Image (cartoon, rainbow, N blue to C red; front, side):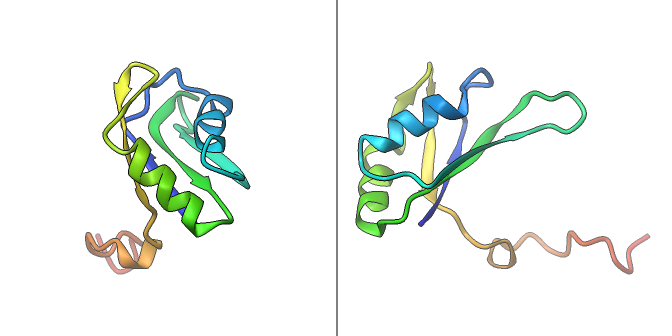
Length: 94
């Protein structure tokens, strides 16, 4: 399951996030999204866990909890096409 993690401390490292989620089971990957111009964290990221039951446990336990000095949001990630918010592709727009 792909898990969305928001409101991260800008100093949180991927290894810190991995460690927190590994308490619930196997973690395939962790990616904190970085700003391409500044190189700083954008304050959110994704954690991939192969076992859905373990992933759901992590979501339930970590959502709205303090992590690295901030109260984080943890939920199942939605595919880009299902998030809504209009056309962000830029085609046909001026």
